[in-house]
Image (cartoon, rainbow, N blue to C red; front, top):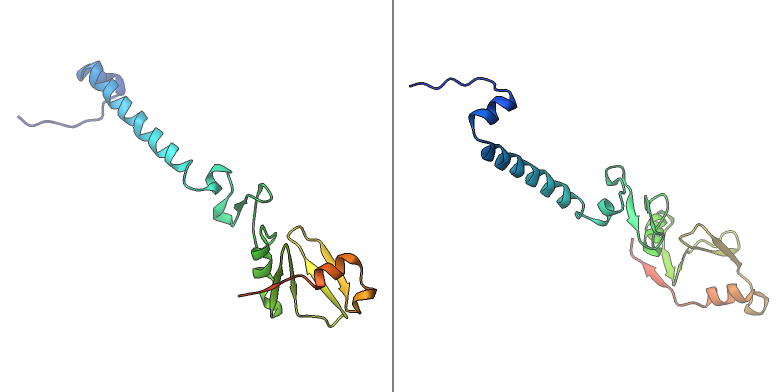
Length: 143
């Protein structure tokens, strides 16, 4: 006897094969769809925080938001990396600076787009903030 396959409406299928078979099939489909959905929710912090990684956004814990690190740095290291085209870059605690003093000043940058400009003058002529920054231990960033 040769079986002929034809399209069956769902209600015909359930009538031909018992209700138990139908429920079993539906439960397997629900289980599989639930597994793929929950697995996607735990792939990365980007998925948890709904950052659009496909267009370059990633989660920044320090700023508690999604951002593109080349547009808005999250960490001091991101900021230093963005400044690598300027030559030697130095990380000084929460600030980044470079060797450019052509303006007669040393400029310090932070991740919130704040800048502190310290004129290159004798110590007794500097503001307390510039004095602290100019004598801070810095490390050269490897670009």
